Structure formats: structure tokens, C-alpha cells
Length: 421
Image (cartoon, rainbow, N blue to C red; front, side):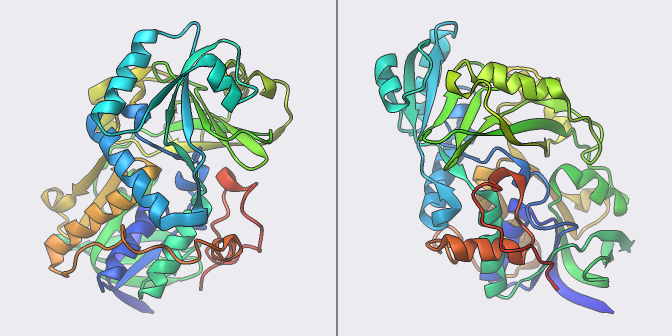
């Protein structure tokens, strides 16, 4: 059986489903296929930070500006898909005060609200904060619950006419006369899909997807560990104000905190070692900021794989567990039009951050408009997602799209996962 669509999006993470929503709201016929449940790749295995842009303020002006803009947009459209916790960057006694000043200046330059408070006031706001905290910078970070965010985007996309298929892996792509003529999709769908345009939004798996079309998209995935422990009452996201390194962030949930993360290059985004030293390092580093988490029992541990574009990483000299630019702190996203590679109706989107998923999706949809002339402008920044004031409704969406993933497993109520038909 053959399924016809104007745009086929391969990959059901934040960018893929966000692209489907954007296109569907413009009146474009769009279909999404995902090999697992939605958010099953990088999106649902992240640490779930809603970036204010402060993390990039001193090193990446463009990235910082994008983050604060999208931070405000997501607050407007996402409701219970996020938690507006706020955030602080803490300077410990051993940390370079000049770096703190550089970050503060960057925040001021790029319009990121930043308030400097003394260590004693920081400890009043965060009672278990280390005595070694000399001062802190208060910024509008927050927490994203990616399972809910992606499921709500999928629900919105379907309400506007999109079709979303989970547990539907692409098993082959046929290229004829310089264009993709069809994609063979197995699993729950088990159909041939013919599309006018195909978007590869598979993230860290973009190389494998592109290879089915005979193309080379060189990725350099890096794994990172997250550790969730029971700890109730932490309000803001706590960031270490130092050159980015392993174990420099603590994300609050209702009754838990998430400790993150490492950055280790891997060859295969599906096959890599989950190493105990990474877990141990999260405790060693994060307890320097919040000593009360030391010795806490681990509720769950998971690894995510970042969808890094290899040419960009090579340009900045990235390496395992590197710091600063070497750790790829100022990564952007890349939209690769494969026309010059000999496949004119195919593009891959790689890199980026969960906070900027909507902006990335808008850029992809704009590209398709440029190519196909489908018309319309993006309205995703102005229309709220469905169900955002009702956590139970959001969690039903999560179940509908098999989107309950490790990052927010303690937050999302289990309504029972089900495959989309």
C-alpha cells in the first residue's frame, strides 16, 4: 500500500514534530514517522534545561540571543510542559571571578536579565547551597518536560491535519532521477510513502538516515549521563559559573533533582558504554554546589546522545570531556539542503538545542516553503499548544504517542503507552 504526502518528516523528536506542527498550521500535508515513541532519541534523554542563554552569553552571542527569545516564547505557549523555576550561576571559591564578569557582561549585552547576589543571599534562596559559594547570578532559566512538550506539539500538528506514526522505522529510501521517489516504512505503518519533500530530522542518527539515500552526513555524536536522585525543595536550576565542564548543572523537579552531564565522543549513537565513572563524577562535581545530595540514592540513570555535526565540531577542536570551545559550548544548528549532493527534494537538520526547537522547526518549514511554494508564514510562536493548563491531558497525549521518556519520568503520570496506528 502507498501513502502520499507533501512532506515526509523522518524523526519524532522536538525538531521533527515541531516542523510538522509548523507546516500543518500553514496548511501543508505532512507526515511524521518515528522508529520508536516520540522523543525517544536525544529529546527525551536530555537534562531538560530551558536555557535563558546565560550559558552561552560570553562565548556565543547568536546562540544566547536565540535562547532568551525562545525561552520567552516557550513560556507563552507551553504551560505545564515547562516549570518556570528560574536559575542561578554560582561562583565557588576556586572559580575564576573574571569568567563570572564576562558572563554577566554577555547577559547584559544580549538582553538576558541577570541579577548578582552575594553568597549569603544565595544560600537564603537555596538553603542547602554550599558555603563555598561566594556570589551568584540569577537568570531566567527553567525546566522543560520534553515528553509533554513533544506530545503536545504532535497533538497540535494532528489537530491541524498532520499524520504522526510512532513505532514506524524507515527501512529504505529510493532515489530516482535525482530525487527521493519513495521511502519504505515498516513497523506499525508498513507502507511505502511517496512525498514531494523529505526532511531528515533524526538527530544523532542523521548519518544513517542520509546513507539510505546514498548521501554522507558526517555526525560526531557525544554521550552524556544524567542522574536523578530524590531531593525535594530545590527551586532554581543551579549552574556552576566556570568554563563548561562535566557535572556543572543541577535541574530541579518536584521531588527530585537531575545531575548532569558528561561529554564523551561515541562512534554509534545506539551502541556505547554506559560507564560508572560518569555517574560518580556527577556526584563528585554537583555536591560541590549542593552538598546535601551526597550519598542520596539514585532513582534512575540515563544517557543521551547529542546530534553534533562533525564538520562544526572539527572546526572548534572538540574532544572528549573537553572544556569551553573544545566542549562545543557554542554549537548551532545546521539545515543541509542536499540538492548539491544530487538529491533535490531532501534536507537534513542537525545540531541545535531543545530550547530552540521551535525556531529550528520554523527555519525548516520556511525552507520547504522556499522550495515548494506552499505559502503561509509560521504562527507557532503565537498559538498555544493544546492541553497546556491540564497536566493530566498532557500526560494522556504522552501515552497516545508513546512519548514517556527518562528525562521527566518522575513528573509524567503513566497513562499506559500506546502505538499510533
